[in-house]
Image (cartoon, rainbow, N blue to C red; front, side, top):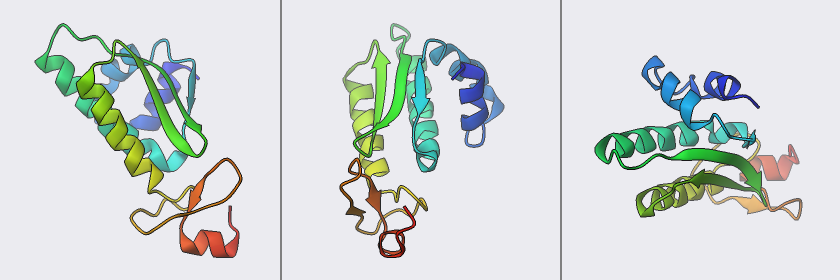
Length: 129
């Protein structure tokens, strides 16, 4: 997926001021295939990344891959630091509490044996997955 396609996805959650940042940071991203319900959390992470880079001009994050692995978000970045690793863990935790099908958040999710994806009670019971 090209970085302009990634921007088209994330632009639903970010204002136009982030466009060049996203285009630059995702220029070499060779896999952007997260669950659609995680896009808001990824946009939140982009905001944190940009503000941290503005605060510390020696940092230059480069997003390499964003995907779903074993039902969890995996966000890989070159030039990462402790701040970003912590922010990524936080976003990964939020995504793990989001229903893979309907996007509901917060209630206890149930897993299946199919790649460890998590579902809310309604989706799990109705076998919508």
